[in-house]
Image 1 (tube, helix red, strand yellow):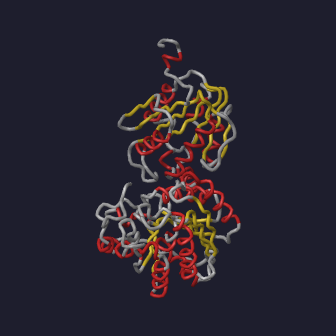
Image 2 (cartoon, one colour):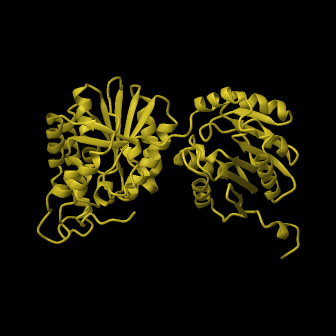
Image 3 (cartoon, one colour):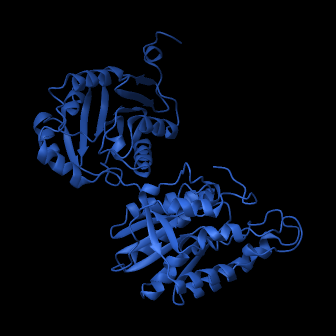
Length: 449
């Protein structure tokens, strides 16, 4: 997403009309032990979550803000103020604004270079992990929406999602900043089906407005010279000074409990044995493997082990993982020579190295972040001569998070090499994604040079 803050952007009144049509659960801080806010730049915490911070203060919920950068590059074309001069000014504005919102809130200023959050992502990862380790539970973590359109916001949102997903007792909500400016309420990009609404009373709204006014470097011109215009002018501020704050809940992977319930209803799973569709798709999958034999195969989401059993005929060792214990029990009986683990990937990952990994009919049950992390885990544990095989149903599935085409495209975009095989038909899409040492079957056999 590319935008220019100097453009007029979306009319706040258009959003007002749209928001009146949105039915969203309310954000409730009752029972929350602590709040941690991730802010890429000074004023993001106020614009995106100032009302929540002030509401937490009234509820006597402790708040800690992780400020990533000092926002020193907010005016790159300024002829009067350098980034070195702006950095301490913005830090002081941040401290003032936070005191207005929550007098006892604490903060950590990480001093990452403005615009370089991606290059310093581990700084946020480490700091957030440390903060959450000692935070009162349950902990509500608030961070930028990863689709906001600003690179620092995207990376901060992605890293925060990953840390929260790996930390028990934490929940995440994401706030938009620039999406209000560039998104179109007639065809919105933001995930309003996952919206959450925090009503703001008059006192909280007043404190949020006063906290924003504590940022004159952003809300007022630095001078009359071109390049010193305000970043957050009145039109921009109107998006954030409403009678409510809007946040987005993360898209979650399908739960372990839902798979347990499925196998309780249908112990055979998805009729992998009797369905000709399943038999044929399995044959296509096995035929697409570029080698006759593999050293070590991993099947992610093995279900009742029908494909796993076939893989034992093609690999020296085979490991299968699944969320549901009922499926694992059947898989062990069906493929006694294979090893099975009950595991929720990507967080739980079997030890070992693989030259064949199979991700069949499970990628669309993963959130986008979990799918990305799964691909990364495969890349970290795949031998150079190994392949990842993905296969996914292309029709609607009411229990899926996304669809097969989206999964295939997302995995391919993240994989460092083009697909060795891509089979597409009306019902499913199959891709074979190679490691760096993999060549075509004919080249491997010496048929072509």
